[in-house]
Length: 329
Image 1 (cartoon, helix red, strand yellow):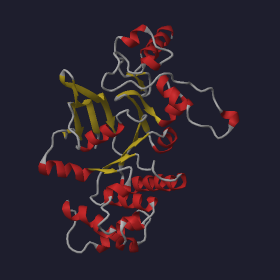
Image 2 (cartoon, helix red, strand yellow; image 1 turned 45 degrees about the horizontal axis):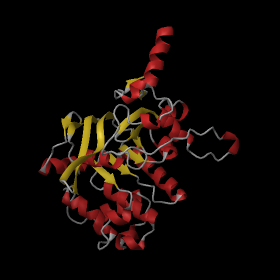
Image 3 (tube, rainbow, N blue to C red; image 1 turned 90 degrees about the vertical axis):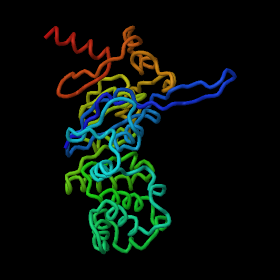
Image 4 (cartoon, rainbow, N blue to C red; image 1 turned 180 degrees about the vertical axis):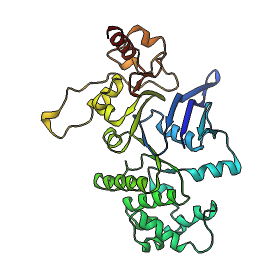
């Protein structure tokens, strides 16, 4: 079942008081995002802090309503669902938050935390002890963990509980919003491997939101690079690592530390700061920091253009190079 976003936009109103009265401004968190997430794939959304990744996740989950655009699951519009229809959608789409200590109720035992969504969503009734123990085993925890409170577990164990809670209602899509960024590196690897095993076992679709390029390339089938609420590039994880075409993607990859000094590349250094989402630049949002920018970049926003094999980029310079190459062949 494919999840599709069509020209999705989200703006937040910001009211500021000044000597002249009240001034209304808008924070443009997500700007015209369109993409298709295929059933059974791990789709990565990568970007710096403030790029709109988490807002996009909240829009997909229905925690925020889009200002414009639509979201469909299997061809059905889900952007404006309410009541029972929204609950049915949440049975299919669940989320793993970044901080499990905040997302787990500190006053409930682990067994109660896992049993609650099972009862609330009508997945099962009666004694749920066996079902809770099965969930704990699925995520690599002992059944005795059901009697403990969240503060009695380590960070990695709490994140395993959060994964089990997401699995409790038997979803088809799981949003992982920076799900391992708060964990030690060794624990990150364990959680990523666990998510991979669960994907194979249950045929899950993942939307993996992170700022870590290495992690997304390792875990994801395809990746979208987000900048100031807009998609700069979408391609397979292999293509992103080996053949990035957008200047912003190239800068991100060049900033990834190399373990072997002999393999260090010349770093592409970005100048300036990320523009404010309240007053984004005209044209391409990246052009004020781009060394390859041309006059057209500051005038018109580039479209996501397929440059071959489903590899798409929103860059006037890249598009011109592709057209020139096609004209000479």
